[in-house]
View (tube, rainbow, N blue to C red):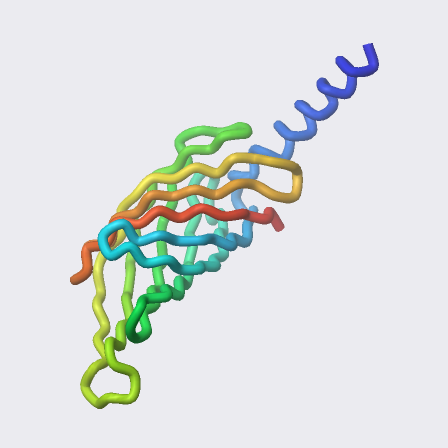
Length: 156
């Protein structure tokens, strides 16, 4: 009986926090990124803010670690959540700008690319204070890199 009561309380607690899709809610994301076309790893951070129920904006910055040079990306995405509960699926579209320097220290080697993002992702509630954030995103600018991001998100 005690175990059943404990499971019930945990389910109610998780479902209360898992509906963090209301206007004014926000989350901080810390993510690892893998670019599928060029096989490059990166680290990303972002802040998600719900400006309306089920709609959020998430600016994020990603620093990649290529074998040669410097490579980073800034994205500003609009997310629409299609499900609620402990597993929240969303679609995204947004703006992306990539900063690339193939030969640091050499003049004329810096390039910036601007384009659009499109993708799908999910936020999975682990506890009331942390969730798993996963995302598959395609960027339309020059590199046209599909990438996979996974990490932790912390509701504020």
